[in-house]
Every structure is written in structure tokens, then in C-alpha cells.
Image 1 (cartoon, each protein chain N blue to C red):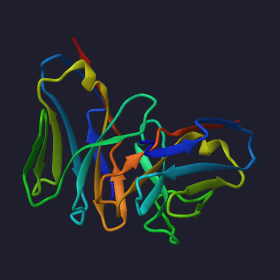
Image 2: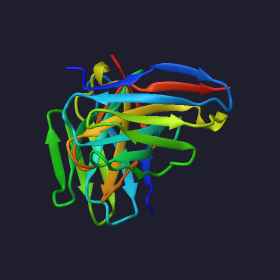
Image 3: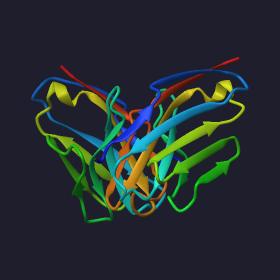
Image 4: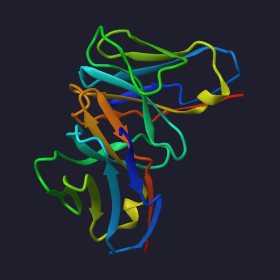
Length: 110
Length: 113
């Protein structure tokens, strides 16, 4: 019940397209859902986060959509750019737990 | 601004050897964490320190020990390294707790032969 399932494992998108990464969870106690971006050889960096009292949060080209009843949340990257090529991790937290998904490697081609 | 600094960046050990991974942050954060990252498994929390003077086990603590030396520094020790501990280790810090943005270091790549 503490897993966070992330899909797809890898994603190839053309420049200007929309990248969509999905995550699902079981434990309804999770109450904080961040997304992290990681470039090769670097540590992850927080991209955007959402709490379950809102259904959507947008920051620039990045949007989190949250469906509490389905226990799913997703990251949408609009107008994807080659500089967005990285690995993306969703995560879910409650009390003293932060559980990460297994990651999605995004490649954006010009 | 250095942020979170980890040393060393790379290390090769033989089975049974011991070593300590060092981590320091200069953001005056209260909470610090150690994760390991393995292919296809995301990041898993090994130990964390919610505040200076406290440490707690995470998801995968077996084979590791930690020390919160002061507010800035949080070290991870492998007493008797095993090949299963080959991984990339990340230290992170946050102002207070897991629901605040975590700032990660660039990792230590550890191979155990």
C-alpha cells in the first residue's frame, strides 16, 4: 500500500509536443505529492508539488493534475523542449514517509 | 551557494571494508536525509534526521549507520560493505520535514567488489 506506481518507464516526444507522465498510489493517507527532475550526474531537484485539496497546479509549462477519487496524479509538460530531457520522479508523502516512483526517462527531440 | 555537498563523488570498495560518506549543507536546514538510487527502483530512504540530535530509520536501513554531527553535517557509514550496497547515494536536506522541498547533493557513486 505504500508503493507509488509510475508510467511510462521512458518517453520520447518531439519538440513542441506534450509530455505526460502518470503516477498512481493506494494509501489514502498520502497528503503531499511532489515531482522531481533529475539530469544525468546530478541530484534530483523539486519541480512542482501539489496537495490533495486542489485538482490542478500550474507553474509555467509544467502542470500537475490530481484525481483524488482515482488515486492518480500526472505531470504534463507543455511545449516540451530538448532542455526538458531528464528523468522525472513522482513521489508521495505522509507523516515521516516519502515514497518515490521508479522514474520516467524523457527524451525530447528537436 | 554550495547547497548540499557530498564527499567523495566516487568510491570503489572491497567486500567487508568500511567507509563513511560525508554530507554537509549550508542552508541552515533542520532536516537531513540519506537515499540510495538503484536502476528501476527510484530513490529509497535509508535514514533521516528530522532535527539536530535525532535520527530515524527509513525504508532500507539495514547495513548502515548514521551520525548527525551538528546542524550542518550528516554522515552515512557502511560498517562491512556488501556488493548489494553498490548504488548511488544521495544526501538531501529540507527546512523542516518531508513536506518541504528537498535539496539534493550530486551523489556518491559507490561500487563494492
